[in-house]
Image (cartoon, rainbow, N blue to C red; front, side):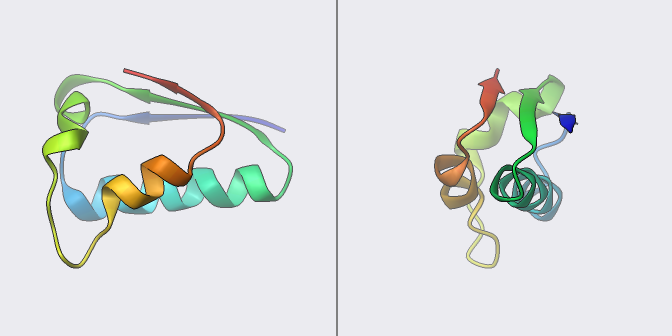
Length: 66
């Protein structure tokens, strides 16, 4: 299955959960693309001890567009 995820926020919990979903779909064999738009392009500045956003993004093996 082909999946497109569009992230338009820099809310740590939302971005973390979207990337968890993307990583799970990749592991299940789906083709996944993630687009960061709007405030989503600020993902590198997200710092939250509860949500490892950068870890999830670094683990992602699909197409990633900013």
